[in-house]
Image (cartoon, rainbow, N blue to C red; front, side, top):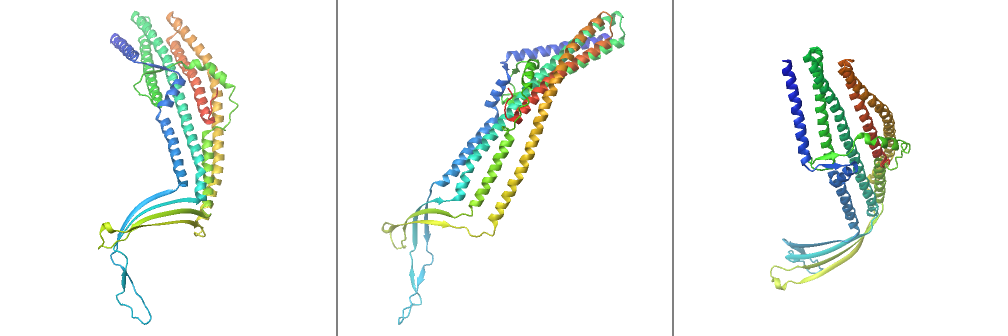
Length: 452
């Protein structure tokens, strides 16, 4: 039964190895894209729906601004009308000395045909002029919103890219542990068959292998999920095979180069603050528009009409058509509307004061986030230095414990502890580098710039 269990375990390992090689061969046959971080960001800028949506918003605002500008040009309209007189108007003449007819005299025609061409345009329109001033602010706000979308996408792609590297490096740590556990299990199996170790020790080694295998499978799943997330953010087909280049340890020197530039943290380019300022500017311009409604307006209009008013007994060919035209100016002076405009202006003033306080809270919140990210980067550097030394020592301890156990100078518990220490040191070291890069990416998003 013991041999049968061992045989099942070996067959399972061989099956897993075969499946892994089959998957690797299948991926190799495809056109695998080896990508750097900058290449991933560049593809995301071209393929991500988020960027296309932001670009369409910019075009939409441009069209909206042109729509507002069209109000400065004359509005020309054409119309045609027909009316039928059902009951004609009557006229009565009251002349002294002559009695008037009680039936009166009917006036008017049976039919009226008219074609009208009219044009109008504003000459003095303070409200329109004030609203046109918002065009530039609207365009600036849309551009800033698009920049915010790009910064968010870059942040997400960057963290996803390094997340794949973290998963791959973690897989290598678990793979090394699994190989060690499998080798130790083989040695203990031989010793158990020779009767030099107890069954309990062999069972413990068997459990250790199976736990290592579980960790390895979980790490492989993490690689697949993080890669899928990266491809989704890049906007490419999820079935496309990609391979992020490098490993986290390659960025160790980058950590120290950028650590000295953490003191210059300015929120001048923060997109949230810039958008908030533009919205506050819009609100102030809305107040100007509201105040402009108190001012008089002047508009010009011209009307040309071509009409005919025949009776039913007149043939169509004998219709008499005649033109009429008018031109005029209209001056509108607002006097009193029940105080609605005054109270509307008061509401806008209250909103402006509220936005001032909201901006102060937003700025303090962003400053807190920037300080937190900076502190996380510094702590990550400290963890990385300690983790690197711990990983070197843990790897050395693992090799020594294995050699000691092989010659009978150590126990399997020493090997197990050494493997656990190696796993913890390896994962901690990789995590510290990822934490620095992740905090740096978040800080760059807050600052609206890049720490080079």
